[in-house]
Length: 350
Image (cartoon, rainbow, N blue to C red):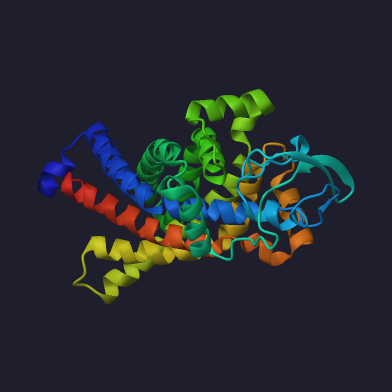
């Protein structure tokens, strides 16, 4: 299709084609990065461990402190629910200043936390199989398609129209358009984000609807938006940083390597911009994971972050960074380049 025929397309046809291009890219990206996302969630969920536990019951193991941190097959007491863990016999324990009923576990006396992304991937594959690596894939796909369509088409429209109407501040359009598009997309798909995080953080037997129903029954309708503030605190700055860096990097690559294609420029610029944005926003990603995995947590984003740093040190706020980078860098590169390929193939290479 020639550029002239592309220009004559109706806005509706153009939007539909952009949606198709974004959907295809979202599905490809989701299949590639889901195992890395599962590893990231498990790593970040470890920060919820209670290392000061002391057991009063007789057990073959010395205590639960490290086992609770490591083993995804233990169920904690009601007041300390964590979907990372599943059923085991009850025994009285004392956690800090709170006496609760906890669990015994047939785990190694020297149980260890995951030491990194590849350790988590190896453990998940060994104990849960390939299915464990793709935990939460259905809600991931259900989340990725509408979220990506809303996000990318909104960004394209806002940055194009904004630059045309306000040329004097065109340099700010990627930042403003990216932030606005992300707020809309993240708010709409927040319930699916909750389901995905819980399914990836635990061995849940139920499906998407059952997980949604359970969350509402346990904590009310507001539970569907648990972690939204942390999601926005993570994703809005991420989008602002990502698109600002992306446009600058792509322009620099275009000037430095004039023989390269737009798709090649987009791939490299997307990877570099994604790495920068992911690193800066990782603390909010950790908070979001903790809020969504623990259905009983009613603390604000700032409170969770302060408590995390106070109890486990500043490094805890960057938990899962390697897994997050391993996921986001290729996903940003794949998504933006496949989106460009789709637009070109469908005749809307603008």
